[in-house]
Amino acid sequence: LALESLREGALEALCQAVAAFGPSAEVRALRACVAIAPGLAPLHLQLARAHLALGQGRSGVAALLAAVSLDETLVGAWALLVDQFTLAGYLPDADDARLRLLVVSSGDAQLQLAADAVLRADLPRARELLPDLERRSAALSQVLQSEIEVRSGRLGRAETLLAAAASA
Image (cartoon, rainbow, N blue to C red; front, top):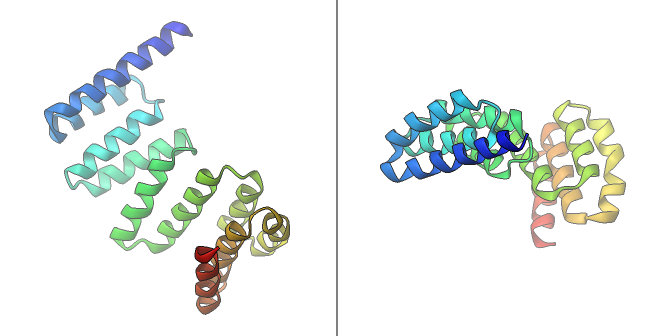
């Protein structure tokens, strides 16, 4: 196990050093690194960033999806997915990624449950979880409630809630 950790650390350091040679060389090196250690989410994230630097959005998104499938807590990967989905016009996917980003960056288990309910389109369950969440964080509760409103087709109410959350 220690040898495996050492190897992974050395592999990540080597791939990071290659970045100095420019995005094209970095992509080639990172592809090789990912082939050697496909289970390392940070390598997939770095590969995604290199692809995106070259304007290779589809390849970048594929690497980002691989990264979050290996480690759902990668805030940077979720943020990039929000940006990429928005740029590509995949707004429902951007909304889902934005919700995941909120959950991951908050570290709140109750918010995770509510967000999972929203993503499964179980809006009654998400609404059920809101009061406990609101007692702990009014702003997070308002953001989640606004997402529920968007998915329920009440955009005006969603905007009001987001404005309240922003001023909290």
